[in-house]
Image (cartoon, rainbow, N blue to C red; front, side):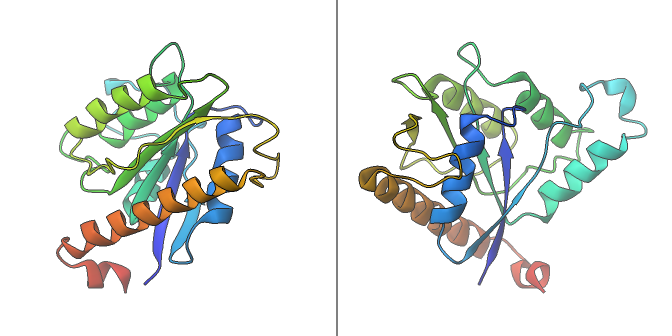
Length: 193
């Protein structure tokens, strides 16, 4: 079975190292994972006044989340926390109250930084938010990645065999996690048809 995995990149920059990481992950992913990007750049700032008639970018965003079998969140860390555009996307995806598009979606969070601790603090904050949103999360392995040009090419090619092996193992664990979670989901076969 093939699983459609939506991925969100927490940076809006076209040259983000996390966008480069997303390319690497897609290249290394097992055949059963089919990726598509769920953009967050067109979402307006979250405002409850807009919930009565959701803006078109919000509707499209929520539909994309709902169409995914699982989610991969690839994000930098801004000021020891979740980047504003990504938090805004989480807020929109979980609203209006009772229409949480994220609920039940098997999700993994990872990120890259030029710093030695990767995105550890952002990931900790994300786990808190995702827990509140009823999102099953991949706990192990954790991925706190330091990016350097010697390791990650612009096109997503990973030059380090150790890093390539780790990312392949991470994606294998994520694939198993998605499979286990969806096996426990009622009507999975109807959704896939």
